[in-house]
Length: 244
Ligand SMILES: [Zn+2]
Image (cartoon, rainbow, N blue to C red; front, side, top):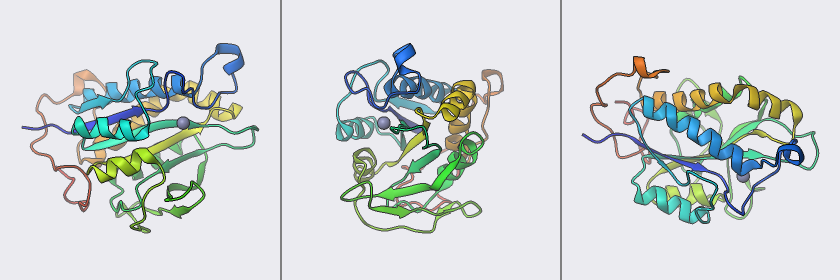
């Protein structure tokens, strides 16, 4: 009986620090550190719910470029992969949360949850879910989330700009890249620091429920039985297929 396997990619690592935070000058922590911390929290909650996980990195190292990270998730035979990032800007004005999804993705079972959970804490950047590419991040396609149907209204067969998403999709793995919030915005940063455990729990809940399972918050409430069956991932599957 195979279990569902989730790839978790903590953005950056090692010499690739990612963006700085509003407190980097004080504590020396960068985006890479926040990504890894959050991925480990999400990992904990997914395991509590009987999911297998694969982390592209578990310490402060650079596991390779985005294509290499996607390849690792493919080799690990992940069903879904999430790349965790934080945003930064050269002024405090920018804030909020957003999620990049593959152009060709039509099922929004998991992303509906991501939005529900993240907008509890951060402003929804318009739109929350978007695709971009193939040439640049400025070539954007709204992915309008239909909450009731758990589908995306806008899809296209372009190639994705974000290499992690693009190469995961090519390998048959549905993948998202989330920019949790802006580390360079004091309010976003403080709200994140205060609520990171709940945010991790919410993101894990979104994945668990996206696969049609009931989310358990603690070890004592975890069902002993593994899921009855799984699909081969969310790629090219309608929403019924991903339900267990
Ligand atoms: Zn990043």
